[in-house]
Length: 309
Image (cartoon, rainbow, N blue to C red; front, side, top):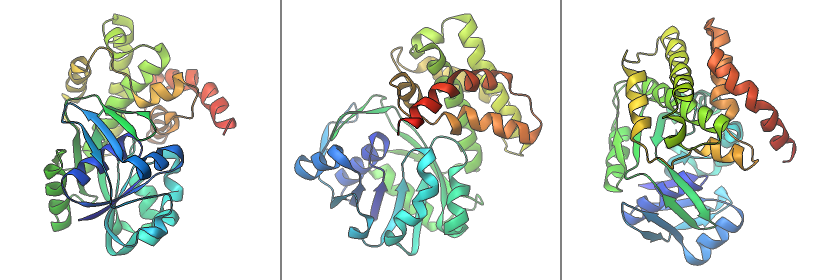
């Protein structure tokens, strides 16, 4: 397949590098020093899945230099999604489809507004990866797990083909019966782990062992479950206990990308994680005191970070 990674940072860069390793024709859309390093020396991956230096077919900051592709994986930050359709237009052919893998649940509908429903499928990824230096990515977790699916939950040849392409590239990829449930499950998990991590400035191993902060994470998850249920999203009754167990299984020193952004004074995805739960809770008439607390404590710093852009 001919695949473009629009936003080849830590997550997108890791996916792109593995696809290159598997022999796919990959275009990495990046910028700045990161792009320059990829162009000059390749993209270096350090991972338990195997170290690798990827030399993509194209590395550029200009989608117009890529041409039409089969798939565009959109891995920019959530607040950048509204500008994506215009930016990726030069890479879109009549059968090109777009896979957003942002945190949160709002990116697919934002893309559908401009691209149409046929051009967008749902996606989410579970991975811990960090951009160590320009052109260098550290993959922390033992594996990368991804879910993809048509937004109407039908089975399609294009989704089957892309799933197999990802599996061939060492990405564990599933096609769930309901892609929206998979996305909401991830939101439930990251709202708790990112929110509590950002509030406490502590890694998983610290906040999950203290009863008070562990209870806060649990309450955040319960609120997301209530909103999803009110919207007809079929999450299992056991999802909160399952996701708490998942958090328990992460390395003690783990942190989340939103947490790291907030701790380092950068703009974060707060508005699209805990902030989205506050907004969607109001629309659904569901009380969200735990998420309100996290959002209200962090929104001032988020506003300061965004004012510095």
